[in-house]
Length: 141
Image 1 (cartoon, rainbow, N blue to C red):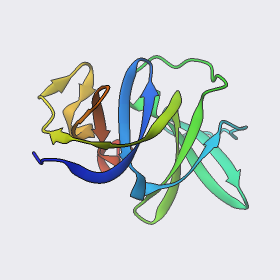
Image 2: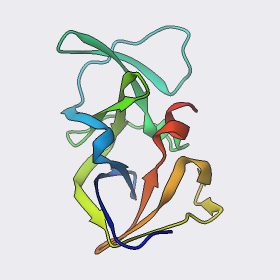
Image 3: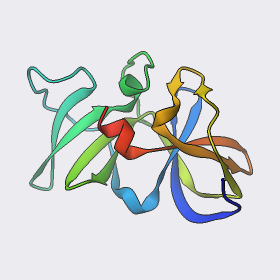
Image 4: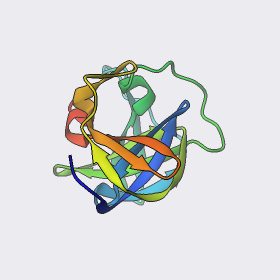
């Protein structure tokens, strides 16, 4: 797809799988906090949080990627991203690091149980492969 990528990404985990989002799309990363449920929404929308006076919807990336839901832990984080004109919180199991990839390849047609449309590519890092998420596809699920 492309040679070395100079763009920075935030790498995070869902279960034992590693994913990344371009750092330019991220507003901030916060610890999990009380989420106010909203009735009659799709199951992956966990509710809303109050982020310094702004109401932000929060979604479960576990649910969107078809992982079984589990209780939040001390490593659970909400990655607050800018998407289109909105701000959205994405719940992840753990945030690992800021990274760059030596190479980004096209994803195979099927990656585990993940819909390939959710991936921009597979980043090749020093410590293995990382799925780079396509926020438009994931959040417009």
